[in-house]
Image 1 (cartoon, rainbow, N blue to C red):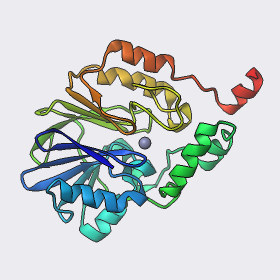
Image 2 (image 1 turned 90 degrees about the horizontal axis):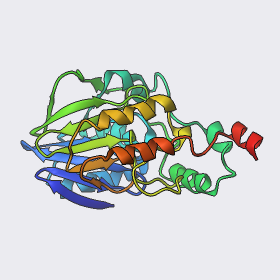
Image 3 (image 1 turned 45 degrees about the vertical axis):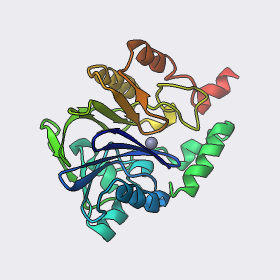
Image 4 (image 1 turned 135 degrees about the horizontal axis):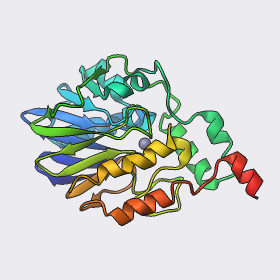
Length: 259
Ligand SMILES: [Zn+2]
């Protein structure tokens, strides 16, 4: 785990397999995402290291995948955390619906060594454990949220999941993008700004379109769900690169017909 203080009360945590952000201020603590189930002790440690109290935590969710809400249910159960999510993502967090890559999709791609390595790490981190958060509540995405003294604009970026949300921190000019955009991933040979492998997206074309939503901001830091923080604003060329590689790896059926 590595923790970087990016602005007053804004810490970026690179966990073993996914990232989270810690906001402090007003005597309260807000997490944006919270890792895999196996990251529970690290999440608690990162809260305490930031000067926060685990018993007064709000979790803002970018999306309901196991590597982003993995410790939420336990934080609710053991520390009374509050979990807030975009209305269109609620069912993916409560698991009334499931929009996440499944075991069959992964099995069909085991001819790719990077996928094998990622899958083993994801399973070890608790990726197949139940992570539903029945206590999750929704916010109004049209309103400016105020969390731990930070005003936050919700940036609807549906595509990776049906209600994926990025978060724009006005005062610190930090853009937390979840998995709408990443800067590295174990399944990818690319370095730099990119989309995740197509198997991870509920709607790949929507995920490609959602990249344009992120161009509207002029951040000092972009914080992805995977990979290191990106300094500065998003270059249109970087978005074009990400879009250009979005279809890089064909799904298995296409793969077989091509090779
Ligand atoms: Zn992720």
